[in-house]
Length: 176
Image (cartoon, rainbow, N blue to C red; front, side, top):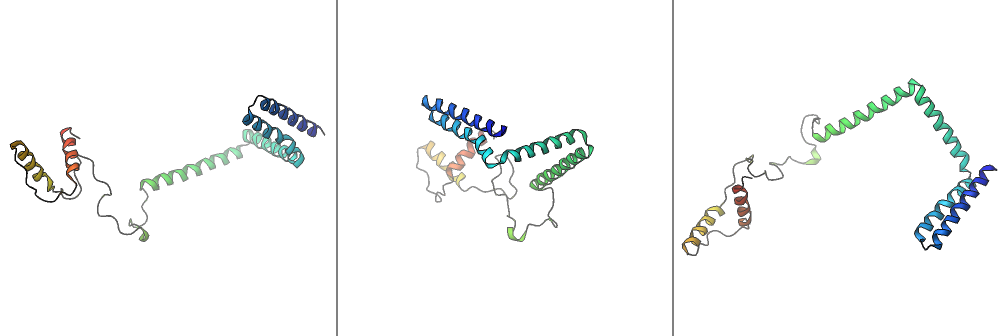
């Protein structure tokens, strides 16, 4: 009976606050207050207050055992060790420290790539033979021809790498 009275009082107080918020034209806040105000009466009418009391009692008993029972502390230590081992194996697996048997890739992954998927940083030696740029002699010839006032030779067809060669030259000058 006391639970019903407290639930009804809390709901009435919440509806009153929601009405004041609506009177001040704060409709979003009023809707939130109204939604929260309906919770106590809804919990009472559905019979969830006894369930909440049971859950509260069980949590209180667990907390008491947590402080006083060494068996609970050993369980917490075991849970911590388990979580630590799972995290460590996941970390090691991502770093590639754990070999997958013979060290070969799975068959579904296909053959391993011949070289790195990204270009090495500027100034870093490449793993394979050094690339030969056909554009550099042509660019140097165009530069000499421009200084002399002569038109440069057409040379080989432009493959669109002149912009990259210019960027590479700027990076080389700056030591990057």
